[in-house]
Amino acid sequence: MAAPETAVIGLGRSGSAVVRLLRRSGQAVYASDAGRSPALEQAAAELVALGAEVDLGGHDLARIGRAALCVVSPGVPPEAPPLLAARLAAVPVRAEADLGLEALEGVPYAAVTGTNGKTTTTALIGHLLVAGGKRAVTAGNIGTPLTQVALGRTLPEAMAVELSSFQLHDMTALRPTVGVLTNLAPDHLDRYASLQEYYADKARLFQHASPRSVWVSNADDAASRDLVRGVPGRHLRFSTREPGDAWYDRAGDRLMVDELPVMSRNELPLLGDHNVANALAAALAVRVMGLDHSALAEGLKSFRALAHRMEPVRELAGVLWINDSKATNIASTRVAVAAMARPFVLLLGGRHKGEPYTVLAPALRERARAIVAYGEAGPIVAHDLAEIGVPVVSGGDFDQVMERARELARPGDTVLLSPACSSYDMFNNYEERGRRFREIVEGW
Figure 1 (tube, rainbow, N blue to C red):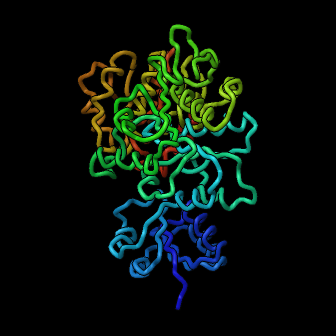
Figure 2 (cartoon, rainbow, N blue to C red; figure 1 turned 180 degrees about the vertical axis):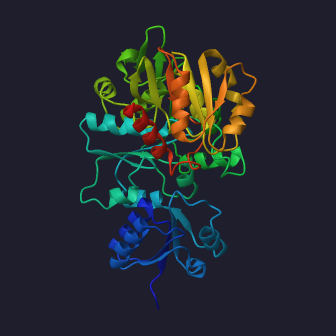
Figure 3 (cartoon, helix red, strand yellow; figure 1 turned 120 degrees about the vertical axis):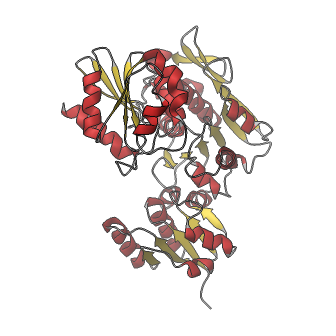
């Protein structure tokens, strides 16, 4: 009788890593991906050499329906045919990150989710742990698959783990040392049937909550307060508005944790109140993981903005150019706009994700010099913001968008790429969009 087989859906970095982990323990694996490219061909050849059976350009749905387990990469939507086939046949479906955490049992970790800020908060946690002397890694949705970490020769002493709603959807093994919820706002409504469905996946962070659990959440965000209400465990809260377990003392212009000052605001090298919130959330998480209060300031001072997240690129002829390509939803762009201390030209557009842009109007009226609306969403942006009293101009291709912004900006202004849309109409991902922004600005 053939050994029970695990089906792995999707052969990007996560899928390839989980196949390697399964084969290392001798499990029979069938892996498939709907795509076909030179990179996938190479990955498939390497996995076949390890003893896996691989299909590219499609999936053997009958075979998936006979599997003992189906493991899914985070980029595969729940309604994809192979996942529907698995569920129809009552095959258990688990996320790649779930298997990674199972293989890394015993390693303390902070699990971070939320609509915005989760990548920066995860990176801050990892940076603080390393600065505090721990052998720590950042993994999950931030880039390195958890199964890849599990394949390493030496396990880390601690982990900072970013989890998207797509990963949480199929996770069963989540028992973090500390769980962090940065905030909640509408997002991915092109993939979820409702906002409640999206929030329900975020709530899976708390699936194994117990009185021993520790949770960090945003006291300033009503949706986050609602989601954590009644969740068992110890709750720590951060705020940029009022005293809490970690908070921004605006009068004293300093960050506070455990009722003690950590650092002055001007020592934190990140733009915007949202990044103050991210730093406070990270500080609470690492305190739970054993980092001393005295280590927080030096770690936070040495952190630098991540690429594509409110990343200052260059000041040219008195105009500061900021790359916030990671802002792929309205809520994230609202946060970026709120951080602007100078008049600004906003680059807004890409592939529309279902939300109206009218909610940006109040903040744009205050300081926006102009808006360059571009991409597939350009006409919707122009329609939604036509009456706000700020010029809305149309862009062509991305190089033309940049030229329009350059023409509109004046010395003392900022040009902000914070698109509130996905990038897939013009680019393969938001990173490619941000790199192109940077390349153009650095080439002038």
